[in-house]
Image 1 (cartoon, rainbow, N blue to C red):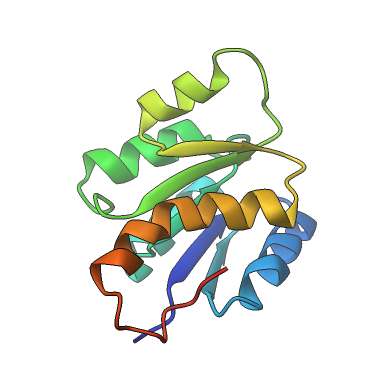
Image 2 (cartoon, rainbow, N blue to C red):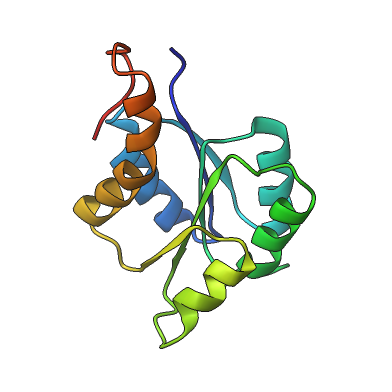
Length: 137
């Protein structure tokens, strides 16, 4: 089975590098984008299983990225997780309404990130319990 792909859309190279390191050890294939427009293009091209999406991007914000991907029908089967420093009351609901599946506040720990990804990968792994090559965290 192919590695599960994750697209990290974040304008901060240190954040991308940290998340990439957290996930590569678990066998994920990582794609990166440093802004919203490149993130949309990368999502369309690579069709990742999971998108980790910063909300505060320099060109179009993460809410517009999520809306675009959901409304164009290019990402109906991917999981979009907002990964942002915005931690105000109501932010999670706003992100969900825009097309995100869930939300993690920065800074995120390895345990929080792994737990969140497992939450969305478990049904996929349960559907095919004999496939021992699927990455688990």
